[in-house]
Picture 1 (cartoon, rainbow, N blue to C red):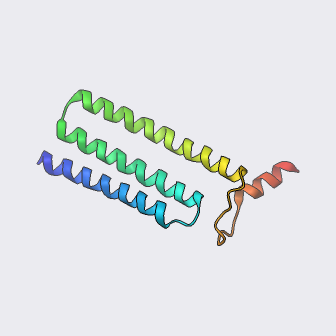
Picture 2 (tube, rainbow, N blue to C red; picture 1 turned 90 degrees about the horizontal axis):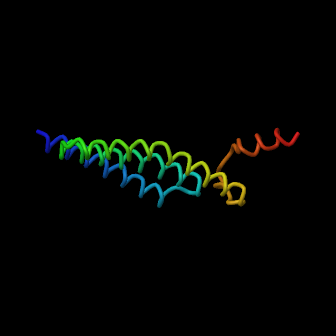
Picture 3 (cartoon, helix red, strand yellow; picture 1 turned 45 degrees about the vertical axis):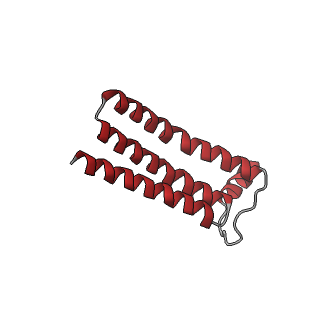
Length: 112
């Protein structure tokens, strides 16, 4: 039973990581690629670590897995935000079908 539960977590994790990789290939610009990658891969890695913890049932492995998951959930969004902000200020173009640029609107209000 433990092997099945662990396998389900591992399979779901790898599927989310696959979705993340497909997102890198299919999304039209840097900003949407970053969003897909950050969200899907963070969840996928978390599920893989949970599956590993369930399989091995060791407190040391569980502690390390929880520490890694917490670290990922705290750092991945911050890193994506910083990279996206640097790309925006570096004039990396938005997708041509982007209709709303909220950051530009916010910056215009701040300049006034």
